[in-house]
Image 1 (tube, rainbow, N blue to C red):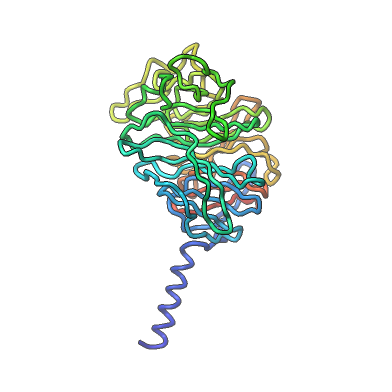
Image 2: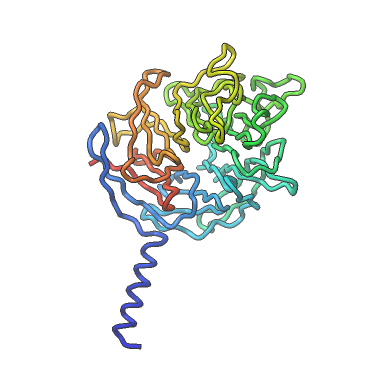
Length: 379
């Protein structure tokens, strides 16, 4: 083998490594109503990234749906998988899902994550609490604090976003598991619900159904299909969430305690194969109407209210990632009303799985299509 051949092989190896974990800095120009923007690749080489959480020092904690969690440095270096995670049912839409820091992370290092938990019969959405040892890249003191009370064999519609309320309670969004959609209207089931628990998994005494016979006391709201985006309104502290419809009827909702959100009885959605309307209509007096809906579906995922200063014209707006729609949606609000929609990043054609505001006041996105973390920079 000649020296020239060896050099060529070495160069190719370097390029291959560069295309994998840790290469950052690639940019792409995109348009917006506020002017041109630049999308910067912060890190790449992730496999089906599902959720992103910022550590206090600016590093990022990323959950990959196949069942791995990694730490990404501010320069884009991706760690080896964190040790100590539980077994994950990584099939269909299931796997390792959301991850958030606990309210007392600075004191106790606690993180919370949701995952598809195998049960031997089927699997269910569960939530675990653990202590993150960043330097040793491992989890300790892991404990499952909540699990759905049913474990059907379906591999779709797990939810699942985690949002801490201002009072320290934890909202958990739970899917209807697709073939069990009727259970979203039944209060003895966790399927198709948003639940509210304390950080230790116990039930807050002011939950809306506490004390009612035959009702799961963790339930906060019901009639949901598959909620994959949730965030607190920055002014009111009320939980907002969006959920997937089938061929139509993706919804943005203000999620209030004790309310029914309709699925599968009141919906804009239609059946996949036949196109027939689902349920009895699009509104009913006892069902909370959506604040916004998409027909046809954009398959929303990830959600963040913008409160930073990097894009002052967007302060207070709601941002939603889209999978099937391959874009980032900006919703302009007037109080609790959605008054305008803008579709961003359509030029890129990427499945946006999660949306988070970083400590620098910029928006960060998970590109599921290419396993990247993206940052939106004003130009």
